[in-house]
Image 1: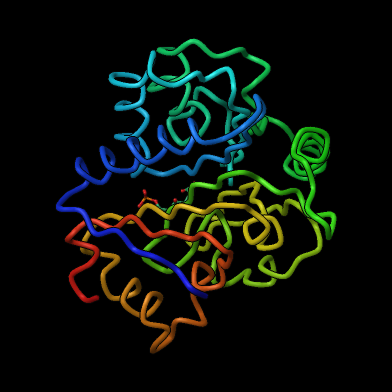
Image 2: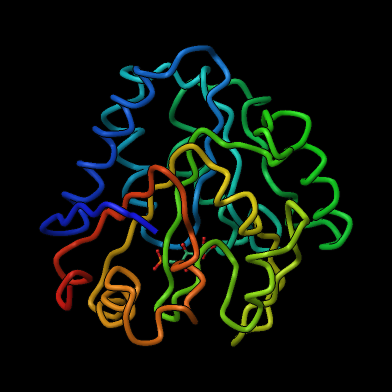
Length: 239
Ligand code: 6PG
């Protein structure tokens, strides 16, 4: 896995650097149906706020079709909802057609929603030569156990699943989640993994260095022609 890394001083400068890179990348895209999958958790919150504060008019958001790499099976109003967070911090503050936002319906039955979301992806996202949905960009995070999206170490079979989405279970809370599979993550034209915090330094050193227990970490298996880790100094401490 040939990945590139960008180490930034702190979470704020990581968000600023990624936001600037993203804006330049959007400008460089042709067409008006750029497909982007967002990550959840806490790291992207600062990015969403920055997009709304500084890029509301700098990016033509109507060109982007937003999806999620994973979603918790909770209603949008739940603070755990990745869609709910993005709606509050970003979508309610920029101009973007509602039909460009392809949320996972966390309030629905997990199995039924997994199938529905998979069908929506297959309707909107073009496929590569192998029939895989090929996102233009997938933004990911990494947990301190090396999970990414909601592919956790105890469900690493999702890395090689032939499905587009799977119903995952959080190893500690048991919370159900819908996640893209490794098949889709690895078909993306571009992947950006945003990693912050000292708690991730040991795992990240193994992942980037392809050393120690790296193979046990799902994020180690994210491959592609353009995979870049955006890392703050705290998470980069052991690199
Ligand atoms: C989620 C995710 C998950 C997240 C990592 C990192 O829904 O939680 O998408 O993969 O990106 O757990 O989360 P933090 O940014 O909160 O550390």
